[in-house]
Length: 194
Image (cartoon, rainbow, N blue to C red; front, side, top):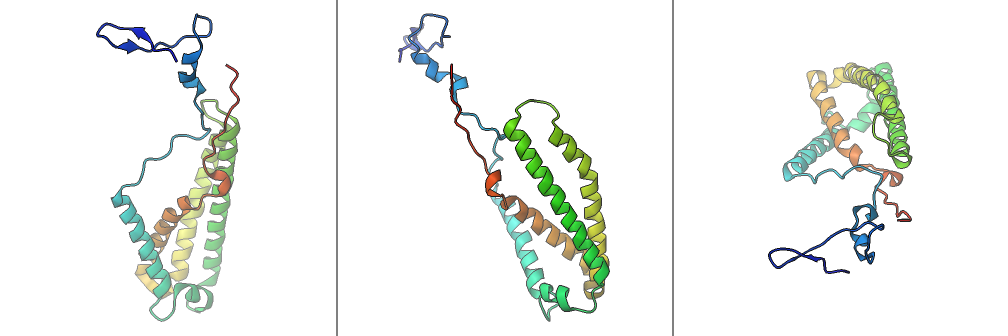
């Protein structure tokens, strides 16, 4: 590598040269375009201890709800065998959650494939699709919450609303951790010709 050019003050200043000018080519390895690029955006900032504590509290509360249920049996047993639950709203709410899950998985894979093969700036096809299905996902979520509230009201009465909200927040904590292997950041080594 070249040592650089003299500068006032006794130090040396590095210069970058294009291939068209007289250069030994040693400085070209410093060029910013020779760095590996990823097709994904910047990684999110690390979580603070307060965020981690909040996440732990949501998960612990949801585990408490699932384990203790109505203090006689756990919530899973209640959902399967208790006659006080209104079954039709429970099943319709479950279908709504299933539709929401399908929408989120579809838009996630659509976004992944678009980011992987397309680097243009601006509004892309997957963003338009994501924005067009967002109202449907919101409506399915609200209707499912109302149906679950109606179905579970005979067991917990007014406590049904905070119970369902706690379970929802626990799901929001867990879902980002369930990243499929194909959705993890992948870095591609590109063959450089310059």
